[in-house]
Image 1 (cartoon, rainbow, N blue to C red):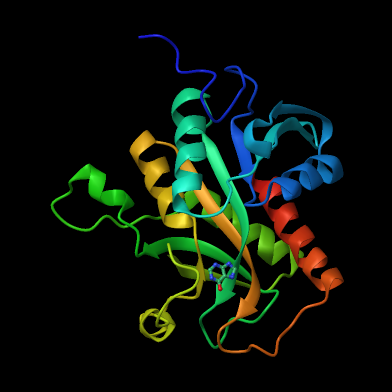
Image 2: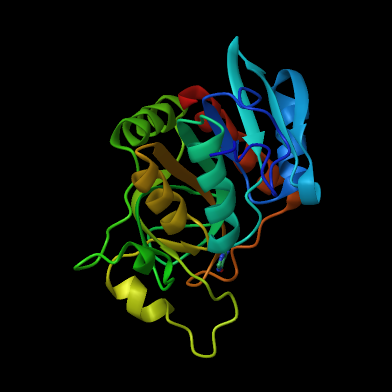
Length: 237
Ligand code: HPA
Protein backbone atom coordinates (compact mmCIF):
# COMPACT_ATOMS: atom_id res chain seq x y z
CA UNK A 1 0.00 0.00 0.00
CA UNK A 2 1.28 3.48 -0.77
CA UNK A 3 2.11 5.71 2.20
CA UNK A 4 -0.86 7.78 3.36
CA UNK A 5 1.61 10.59 4.27
CA UNK A 6 1.23 13.49 3.57
CA UNK A 7 -2.52 13.29 4.07
CA UNK A 8 -5.28 15.55 2.78
CA UNK A 9 -5.28 17.33 6.15
CA UNK A 10 -1.64 17.26 7.29
CA UNK A 11 1.06 18.23 4.83
CA UNK A 12 4.02 16.89 6.83
CA UNK A 13 6.53 14.05 6.72
CA UNK A 14 6.89 11.14 9.13
CA UNK A 15 9.17 12.39 11.91
CA UNK A 16 8.03 16.02 11.63
CA UNK A 17 5.88 15.61 14.76
CA UNK A 18 7.24 14.84 18.23
CA UNK A 19 5.89 11.82 20.12
CA UNK A 20 3.67 14.13 22.15
CA UNK A 21 1.33 16.68 20.56
CA UNK A 22 -0.49 19.40 22.48
CA UNK A 23 -3.82 20.10 20.89
CA UNK A 24 -5.77 23.32 21.44
CA UNK A 25 -8.98 23.82 19.45
CA UNK A 26 -7.99 27.16 17.97
CA UNK A 27 -5.21 27.40 15.32
CA UNK A 28 -4.20 30.84 16.64
CA UNK A 29 -3.68 29.28 20.07
CA UNK A 30 -1.37 26.75 18.45
CA UNK A 31 0.79 29.58 17.10
CA UNK A 32 0.63 31.39 20.45
CA UNK A 33 1.82 28.23 22.29
CA UNK A 34 4.67 27.73 19.83
CA UNK A 35 5.73 31.41 20.07
CA UNK A 36 5.40 31.61 23.86
CA UNK A 37 6.49 28.24 25.22
CA UNK A 38 8.59 26.45 22.61
CA UNK A 39 12.17 27.04 21.54
CA UNK A 40 13.29 26.58 17.93
CA UNK A 41 9.68 25.95 16.80
CA UNK A 42 9.20 25.14 13.13
CA UNK A 43 5.91 25.09 11.22
CA UNK A 44 5.18 21.49 10.13
CA UNK A 45 1.59 21.87 8.90
CA UNK A 46 -0.62 24.68 7.68
CA UNK A 47 -3.36 22.93 5.67
CA UNK A 48 -6.64 24.88 6.20
CA UNK A 49 -4.72 27.18 8.56
CA UNK A 50 -4.46 24.32 11.10
CA UNK A 51 -1.02 25.32 12.21
CA UNK A 52 1.24 22.59 13.56
CA UNK A 53 4.61 23.36 15.11
CA UNK A 54 7.41 21.22 16.51
CA UNK A 55 9.91 22.70 18.96
CA UNK A 56 11.49 22.15 22.36
CA UNK A 57 10.28 22.74 25.92
CA UNK A 58 13.00 22.42 28.60
CA UNK A 59 14.98 20.34 26.12
CA UNK A 60 12.06 17.98 25.31
CA UNK A 61 10.83 17.78 21.72
CA UNK A 62 7.12 18.65 21.66
CA UNK A 63 4.59 19.47 18.94
CA UNK A 64 1.47 21.56 19.01
CA UNK A 65 -1.33 21.46 16.46
CA UNK A 66 -4.94 22.63 16.54
CA UNK A 67 -7.87 20.20 16.46
CA UNK A 68 -10.52 22.58 15.15
CA UNK A 69 -13.93 22.47 16.82
CA UNK A 70 -15.99 19.34 17.37
CA UNK A 71 -15.62 15.59 17.27
CA UNK A 72 -15.42 15.08 13.48
CA UNK A 73 -12.53 17.55 13.34
CA UNK A 74 -10.51 16.15 16.27
CA UNK A 75 -11.33 12.65 14.96
CA UNK A 76 -9.51 13.41 11.70
CA UNK A 77 -6.41 15.04 13.19
CA UNK A 78 -5.96 12.58 16.07
CA UNK A 79 -6.48 9.57 13.75
CA UNK A 80 -3.84 10.78 11.33
CA UNK A 81 -1.32 11.77 14.02
CA UNK A 82 -1.66 8.45 15.89
CA UNK A 83 -1.91 6.13 12.88
CA UNK A 84 0.19 7.81 10.15
CA UNK A 85 2.66 10.21 11.85
CA UNK A 86 3.92 8.04 14.74
CA UNK A 87 2.49 10.23 17.52
CA UNK A 88 2.10 8.40 20.87
CA UNK A 89 0.36 10.96 23.09
CA UNK A 90 -2.09 13.78 22.49
CA UNK A 91 -2.89 16.28 25.22
CA UNK A 92 -5.97 18.34 24.43
CA UNK A 93 -5.79 21.80 26.04
CA UNK A 94 -9.20 23.37 25.77
CA UNK A 95 -12.06 25.11 27.45
CA UNK A 96 -15.34 23.79 28.76
CA UNK A 97 -18.59 24.96 30.30
CA UNK A 98 -19.12 24.11 33.99
CA UNK A 99 -22.00 21.76 34.90
CA UNK A 100 -21.33 21.17 38.60
CA UNK A 101 -21.85 23.35 41.67
CA UNK A 102 -18.28 22.82 42.87
CA UNK A 103 -16.86 23.83 39.50
CA UNK A 104 -16.20 27.53 38.94
CA UNK A 105 -14.96 29.59 36.03
CA UNK A 106 -11.12 29.43 35.73
CA UNK A 107 -10.95 26.03 37.53
CA UNK A 108 -9.18 23.20 35.74
CA UNK A 109 -10.92 19.94 34.80
CA UNK A 110 -8.86 16.82 34.09
CA UNK A 111 -11.15 14.60 32.03
CA UNK A 112 -11.00 11.11 33.51
CA UNK A 113 -13.75 10.06 31.10
CA UNK A 114 -16.02 11.57 28.49
CA UNK A 115 -19.69 10.89 27.85
CA UNK A 116 -21.08 11.78 24.45
CA UNK A 117 -24.18 12.18 22.31
CA UNK A 118 -22.02 11.43 19.24
CA UNK A 119 -22.36 8.34 17.04
CA UNK A 120 -18.59 8.04 16.55
CA UNK A 121 -18.16 4.72 18.40
CA UNK A 122 -20.95 3.01 16.41
CA UNK A 123 -18.46 2.27 13.63
CA UNK A 124 -16.78 -0.32 15.91
CA UNK A 125 -20.01 -2.33 16.14
CA UNK A 126 -19.47 -3.16 19.80
CA UNK A 127 -21.99 -5.34 21.63
CA UNK A 128 -22.49 -2.60 24.25
CA UNK A 129 -21.36 0.91 25.15
CA UNK A 130 -17.73 1.99 24.86
CA UNK A 131 -16.43 4.12 27.76
CA UNK A 132 -13.81 6.66 26.55
CA UNK A 133 -11.22 7.21 29.32
CA UNK A 134 -7.98 9.13 29.79
CA UNK A 135 -4.60 7.46 29.98
CA UNK A 136 -4.14 6.77 33.70
CA UNK A 137 -0.45 7.67 33.84
CA UNK A 138 -0.94 11.00 32.07
CA UNK A 139 -3.90 11.73 34.34
CA UNK A 140 -1.96 11.03 37.54
CA UNK A 141 0.96 13.17 36.30
CA UNK A 142 -1.45 16.01 35.59
CA UNK A 143 -2.94 15.67 39.09
CA UNK A 144 0.56 15.85 40.60
CA UNK A 145 1.39 18.95 38.50
CA UNK A 146 -1.83 20.68 39.65
CA UNK A 147 -1.04 19.86 43.30
CA UNK A 148 2.54 21.15 42.97
CA UNK A 149 1.34 24.39 41.39
CA UNK A 150 -1.47 24.82 43.94
CA UNK A 151 -4.14 25.02 41.22
CA UNK A 152 -7.83 24.36 41.77
CA UNK A 153 -8.64 21.26 39.74
CA UNK A 154 -11.35 18.59 39.42
CA UNK A 155 -11.06 15.06 38.03
CA UNK A 156 -14.12 13.40 36.49
CA UNK A 157 -16.45 13.08 33.56
CA UNK A 158 -16.98 15.59 30.76
CA UNK A 159 -19.74 15.61 28.18
CA UNK A 160 -18.43 15.81 24.63
CA UNK A 161 -21.44 17.18 22.80
CA UNK A 162 -22.08 17.43 19.07
CA UNK A 163 -24.56 20.24 19.68
CA UNK A 164 -23.60 23.70 20.91
CA UNK A 165 -27.03 25.29 20.39
CA UNK A 166 -29.45 22.70 21.80
CA UNK A 167 -33.19 22.95 21.15
CA UNK A 168 -33.70 21.95 24.77
CA UNK A 169 -30.74 21.95 27.17
CA UNK A 170 -29.60 18.49 28.25
CA UNK A 171 -27.47 20.05 31.01
CA UNK A 172 -29.72 19.03 33.99
CA UNK A 173 -29.72 15.37 32.95
CA UNK A 174 -25.95 15.13 32.57
CA UNK A 175 -25.38 17.17 35.73
CA UNK A 176 -27.55 14.67 37.66
CA UNK A 177 -25.05 11.98 36.60
CA UNK A 178 -22.16 13.93 38.08
CA UNK A 179 -20.78 15.19 34.78
CA UNK A 180 -18.51 18.16 35.55
CA UNK A 181 -18.62 20.10 32.31
CA UNK A 182 -19.30 20.24 28.58
CA UNK A 183 -17.04 20.59 25.55
CA UNK A 184 -17.06 19.08 22.08
CA UNK A 185 -13.97 16.90 21.46
CA UNK A 186 -12.74 14.59 24.22
CA UNK A 187 -14.86 11.43 23.74
CA UNK A 188 -13.67 11.09 20.15
CA UNK A 189 -10.05 11.85 21.07
CA UNK A 190 -10.08 9.13 23.77
CA UNK A 191 -11.83 6.65 21.46
CA UNK A 192 -9.36 7.27 18.65
CA UNK A 193 -6.45 6.82 21.08
CA UNK A 194 -7.94 3.55 22.37
CA UNK A 195 -8.43 2.15 18.87
CA UNK A 196 -4.85 3.07 17.89
CA UNK A 197 -3.38 1.71 21.16
CA UNK A 198 -2.14 5.23 22.01
CA UNK A 199 -2.57 7.68 24.90
CA UNK A 200 -4.59 10.84 25.43
CA UNK A 201 -5.62 13.30 28.11
CA UNK A 202 -7.84 16.38 28.08
CA UNK A 203 -7.07 19.32 30.33
CA UNK A 204 -9.73 22.04 30.25
CA UNK A 205 -10.09 25.41 31.87
CA UNK A 206 -13.67 26.29 32.71
CA UNK A 207 -14.53 29.27 30.50
CA UNK A 208 -18.19 29.65 31.45
CA UNK A 209 -20.67 28.07 33.83
CA UNK A 210 -24.23 26.90 33.31
CA UNK A 211 -24.76 27.34 37.07
CA UNK A 212 -22.88 30.58 37.64
CA UNK A 213 -23.48 32.69 34.51
CA UNK A 214 -22.38 35.76 36.47
CA UNK A 215 -18.84 34.40 36.77
CA UNK A 216 -17.50 36.32 33.81
CA UNK A 217 -13.76 36.56 33.33
CA UNK A 218 -11.54 39.32 32.05
CA UNK A 219 -9.25 38.65 29.11
CA UNK A 220 -6.30 38.79 31.51
CA UNK A 221 -7.83 36.19 33.87
CA UNK A 222 -8.54 33.90 30.92
CA UNK A 223 -4.97 34.29 29.75
CA UNK A 224 -3.62 33.44 33.24
CA UNK A 225 -5.71 30.27 33.55
CA UNK A 226 -4.69 29.31 30.02
CA UNK A 227 -1.03 29.71 30.99
CA UNK A 228 -1.54 27.48 34.09
CA UNK A 229 -3.14 24.78 31.92
CA UNK A 230 -0.33 24.99 29.36
CA UNK A 231 2.34 24.62 32.03
CA UNK A 232 0.67 21.43 33.30
CA UNK A 233 0.40 20.06 29.76
CA UNK A 234 4.04 20.85 29.01
CA UNK A 235 5.19 19.32 32.32
CA UNK A 236 3.58 15.98 31.44
CA UNK A 237 4.43 16.09 27.70
N1 HPA B 1 -20.66 24.08 25.33
C1 HPA B 1 -19.87 23.38 24.52
N2 HPA B 1 -18.56 23.58 24.46
C2 HPA B 1 -18.02 24.51 25.24
C3 HPA B 1 -18.79 25.26 26.12
C4 HPA B 1 -20.17 25.02 26.16
O1 HPA B 1 -20.91 25.67 26.91
N3 HPA B 1 -17.97 26.12 26.77
C5 HPA B 1 -16.72 25.88 26.31
N4 HPA B 1 -16.74 24.90 25.39
